[in-house]
Length: 581
Image (tube, rainbow, N blue to C red; front, side):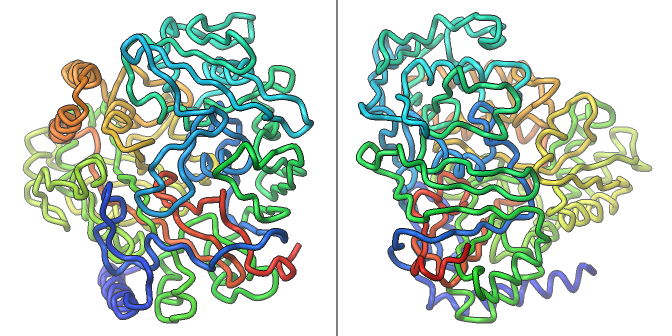
């Protein structure tokens, strides 16, 4: 689409949202600053549809399969939400509340948030009594230990690596397949698990919310195939799963709500219908007829569909748009020419037209321009404008930098984007084309996207992806995106610029060792600017997650700790009798 048309469309969307803002129950939030910068955003921080009734079938309309549901491999925000709210429980979890309260921790499998000793190098959790799997067998501390260990297995790549980063004696560990176990994870009895860390880690309870710390019984583990059928410790179990087509969840009758303060498990069934076209999903939910009245969208609203929603008050009232709290970036392969030259990377930063990327992502009503690496929540509410580059770029400065790098005539390169971000890829292509950088776009299905870009030997020079802090700390952002010591050949996560910088890694270690959390926050913020000056990535936008729900859906809100995705712990139907099947 022509740039001028896209810009005009974005202006129209802002006006439409502004006119409807009075009808929205959301708005600017305080607290940790998540999603707080755009007062025109629809239903921010709201719970839509009232209190659900028990029963019925909730349908999830999706354009993709899950990246992973195996808790050892599940490290995509929306997938983690779905897995940990419906299929398996973790030692600790987040409150099921909108806004800043959604960042608060509560016990899940554990009786409390963990007890630290030895200067926060030892963490002990006691499991609740009466916890059971879908077959009625007891959930044990040994099962949690087993899943932590299997997360190290080379044939299960891509999952959270907090265990590898923090457990004592974990270097070189390859999982339990050969009968070897981690001595730093102790289970003195079936209800107690103790983690011995290599250095103090006061934030460990936040890490314990991740799927790594869900239970997997050894007898049920079948390696990579476990992705197709995780064994349930949550309120639902898998009835059927046809990859790329449909997932059906039914109640786990052995889940005891008396042990669970978070999950309400309102629907009788959840059906995830996959492989739909993006506009098809939007149109079905806009119409909200028949069974689609009891449906929700897995993916964010398409930019092309936004006018259809914002210009109709009754439809707009069903739109949620929580901030993803994630910074989307153009990540450059710093180990491969020409991007091994910092001047070339800086040229990309200056050439990038963030206004065009925002427009391709749904317009400024649903996006904020990224001016730093970490999202605003880690800067007290708003990102600093670290480099001071104009929103549409600085073409002359970019050309100067390319000339200094001996690339005055430009060069050709490739970028990988999720197929839902093709418009963004085109905006990047046009931006860089202004300075002679010719970009070929390669699109990948969302369910295969992270595996594709995580194959470091075969990936493109550029990738468009982002990072979300796992909890409100710079320690969950900069080290995961820019610490070269954790780059993997396969299943590489986070550091897609393949950035290896000794000074940066040394400083990360120094900040991580600080005992004053407030001082550490300041140092993470300072380091953010120092890394940005070395240009491993070009920040683009901080997106919102615009999600449309059907007219019969209740209890819906975007959860701040799951990238703005719907919280599946408390969603349900207004009238289960009309829920569809």
